[in-house]
Image (cartoon, rainbow, N blue to C red; front, side):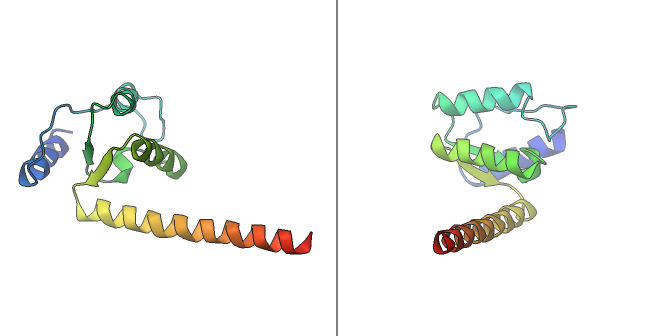
Amino acid sequence: MRRQARAIRHYAKDRGLAIRSIYMDPGCERSSLDRPDLQRLIADCHAGKIGTIITQDPERLSRDTSQLLALLHIFQKTGVRVEFGTSEGRTRLAYLKVYLAALLEIEEAKRRSQRKHS
């Protein structure tokens, strides 16, 4: 945890970003949204207290893809930018975006096919 916090502070400093709060849920399962500091983070996003979230990689937010997508959607709706401090994190997010685009395309093709046959 300390190593990750140190890396995030370094990332922020290099980009001229100020860290106002650190949200950590040590010992909590990353596949659960019911984590105290994660809930505080979401509340602070809704309250307009956060402009950018910095985390090492998407798994630090959630290891469950659907929950991760829900969180990213919340952050987007509240105008909060999410940055990943490692190239692996940025790569995982890019892969996730491609995966989602493909899923949306498949769903749209199914809808068009269903309309055609009805």
